[in-house]
Amino acid sequence: MAGYDSIFAKVERLFTANIQDLLTRALNSNKLAVFDEEVNRLNGALEQITVAHGESLGREKTLTRELDELEDEVAALSQRLNLALDKEEQATSSSQPTQASQYTALAKATLSQRNTKSEILTSKQHQLEEAKEQIARLYEARVKLGARIDVLRAQRSKLAALIEERKAAAAQGRALGAIDVRSAFSPDALIRSEQEALERQQGIAAARSLTLGQNLDDVLGNEALDEQLDALRVERKQLK
Image 1 (cartoon, rainbow, N blue to C red):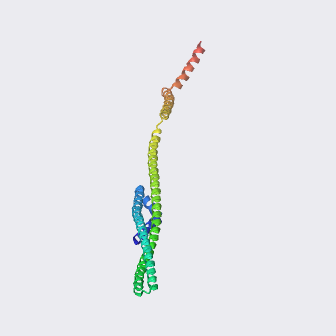
Image 2 (image 1 turned 135 degrees about the vertical axis):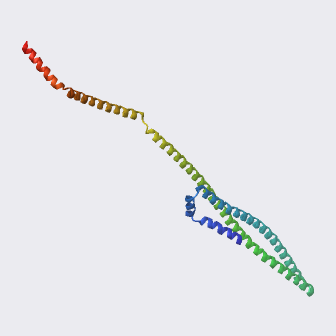
Image 3 (image 1 turned 45 degrees about the vertical axis):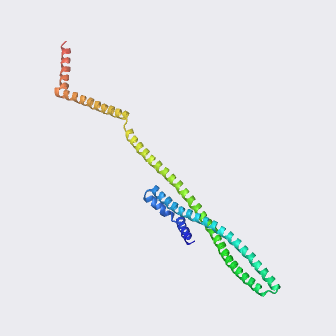
């Protein structure tokens, strides 16, 4: 039973293990690998419990068979004891002390055998009760461990799905980022920019043309010439 107790202690440690430690290891390393490691640990304990459970079932079967045999032996010894006592009583009644003494010795020997068998029977009954308790505990541990393994596997699948979704979302984000960069290119904006540049240049050219005309007038003295022509026109009218 000591071996079974060590198995129960191991299972208890597995169930009472600090879940925060598992989470910390998962955050600092490959998350799925941590889940796989934990499932492997639980599977190892489950295998030991399964073996122990099978051994306990076999022991229960053996003890049950031995108890049936011992009960039959005790019953047979009880019959022999009663028969020896009957013979002893008959010999005593018939005044046959020698035979009575022989039957007394036989009764004592039979009683001694029955007592021994009864003690063994009682011990086996206690062992059977303990075996049944162990079977119940091992079965409960198997169910709990199996359930926890199933939960961890389901959680691993959920985690794997989330990781894939995160990777897909990251890839989508990168793709959308590239699209945003390309979307900065706008043909209309470029055309407007060029039109504005053209208009600015045309305005500058027009302004420079006016300035150039004024400068030419200044260089040629056009204003003075206009005044002289006006004076000549006046003189010509007066002469007529």
